[in-house]
Length: 203
Image (cartoon, rainbow, N blue to C red; front, side, top):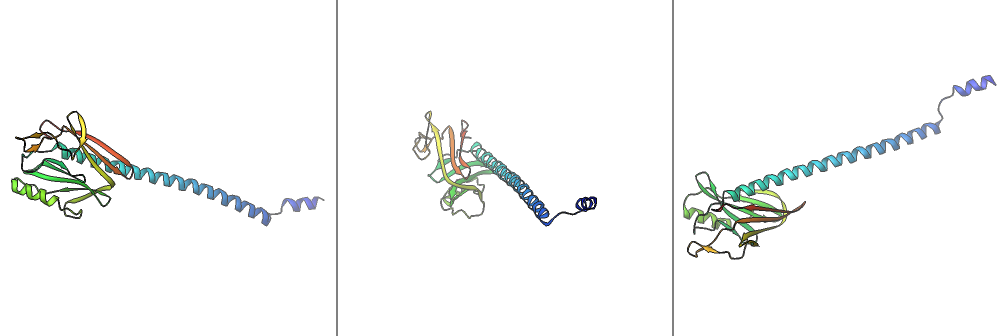
C-alpha cells in the first residue's frame, strides 16, 4: 500500500491534463490578443481623429487669413464672389494682390492661389483663368475630402445666399461687401460651419 502511494505521488501529467492546460492557455492568449488589438485600434482611431482635427484647424486658419486680407480693388474684379461652387477672394499679398479660389471639385476641397499682381489687367486675367480651373493646376492644393460647399453673406442684419444681389456701391457699379462670411462645408466627419466677420474696409 505504501509503495502504491509513492508511485501515485510521483507520476507526471496525463495527456488529457496537458491538453486541457493548452486549451486554457490558448483561450487566455486569445482573449489577451483581442484586448490588445482593441487597444491598438482605439489608439489608431484616436490618432486619425486628432490628425483630422489638426488638419481642419489649419484649413480654417488659412480661410480666416484669406478673408482677413481681403482687398477691395474697385471695379476691376469683385473682391469677394461666390457662384454656387467657387469662392473667389482678392487678398493682399507681398508686392500687390492675389486671387484666391476655394472650391469643391470631385469630392475634394481645394484652394488655388493665383500669381501676385499689381496691375488691373493682370488681375482680370487671373480672374478669368480662375473660371477655367480643373483642379489639377500648379498652385492647386487639396485640403480635405468634402461633398458640399456653400457660402453665405451677412447683409442687412441677416444671413443671405451669397449669390443673391447685395447693395450697390461705387456709383451703383458693384456690390457692397458683406459684413461677415459664413462657411458651410460637408466633410467626412460631418458638417463644418464657420462665421468670419470682415473689417470696415472688407478685411
